Image 1 (tube, helix red, strand yellow):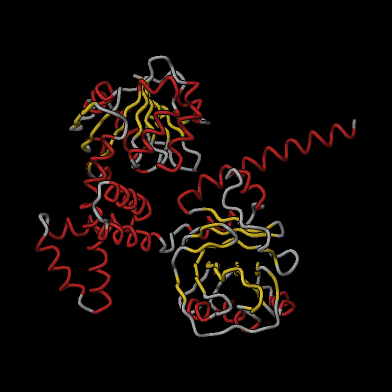
Image 2 (cartoon, rainbow, N blue to C red):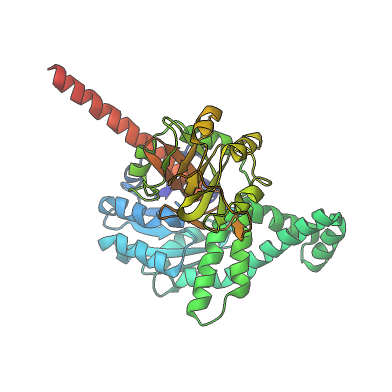
Length: 451
């Protein structure tokens, strides 16, 4: 059997290695610099990976599932089954099936029920869709308990999301309780209370605590999908919405490879990033650089201010750290400056890389002399109010773009672009491909001129 695995993240690697161990011929692809499992052949692209495959496994994350399905659909064999294992809403699974065109009749929605890192390729699954039975048989060969329910694409994912309401909620409340115990100096007592209530005790606690923190961003998306499902069923998702917010907060903690990622983005022009993201996430040009040749790449620390009031910025500087970029929603008010020279130097002392402000600034000459990059709607000599209200870390809108805390922000003389953290690695690879293509075309243009 020939199997293609699209996405060699943690789960993709485990399934690729698992099928290879059964004697299957496995080809994998991932645009990021992910290691290739033993026994798996690495393809240069998704299209190359799926050629001649009997079964394609998509583990590219829900955000990219539809576009990848559309990309490979024309290259699937007439009998190739396509299994989507991404954690996604029922609607997203239906969109993936539709993107496959004629191959939709060979589509399977695969919902992973359990922890793949813990149970490996034997993790329990629910499978729905036209190809539920043959895809279920393939996974049973790995020793996995599989429930094939037939039905429509999205039916399996609906069941998974219903389970998410409890499972992700449990992980979220455990991490919050452990953090509270640490802050109160009672971590061992809190730990004993939790482990005593869990089947599996300390081992179960550690698995839920570590797993929730490690996969917080993905679980935030899953919890948000669960909240949407509950609302559609007429159930108020009060607790589930809080669970999604908890996971979002955990995902905003600095990643160990953040410096590498930011350093790579610092070398890529915003124009190339914009092309790689289909011109999405580009901040309106009214938010412009305040001095020539400024450039930055950092992680968003979001601030929502009342127009003309900078109390939130002062408070944000007490929690900001190296690598942060303050992204300030000031309501686009040009009449009162939200920052000036003194705040800029305080920010530099905290390691803040710059600010993106949907509002005005002042002391522009001093900002340039300090080397502090700022993008804003303009300058005004009028100072701000300092009464509030404000919000820190909440979602904001700056220049028509919604920004979440932790998003990657890149700015240069062309403008500002925001990249969701979940898309950062893929976008970086695509932006580099844009630059390589432009460089090749530039050389051809020069050679034509010389000729």
